[in-house]
Length: 146
Image (tube, rainbow, N blue to C red; front, side, top):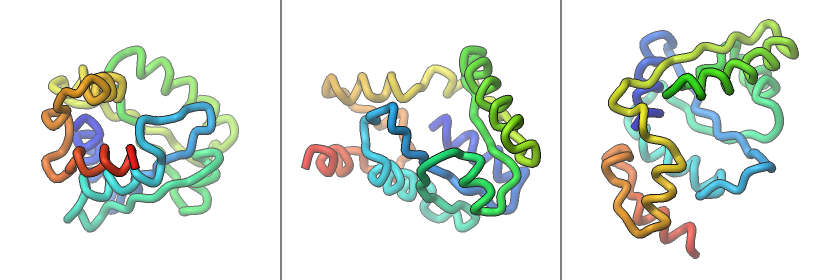
């Protein structure tokens, strides 16, 4: 839900927003990237000015390939800001033409993290209250296990 809040804020600034799912070889996410793309597409269904895609490599290279000059990053806490600030500074050094923009999530979403959602799901709980209504998490859990 925090991501959707950030997306709605970004759409107030931009005519089109690309939600980009990066492949991070250092992480093994709860869902593989192709499934994450499908989940996000469900979440943004009906939002014609949102594109969802995945990429490998540096985010700045993806931006250049797409002709994008801004990276939107969501923030929940000061810890997020510290981590995202370091990434933004590195990106700025490598690509001064690409701007990082931080958008804070609404306070009602500040406690929701992928770790919390993963923990709930791993322990058999329902994470529906943390997810957009049109995301059928049970379907994706079955696909993940298949």
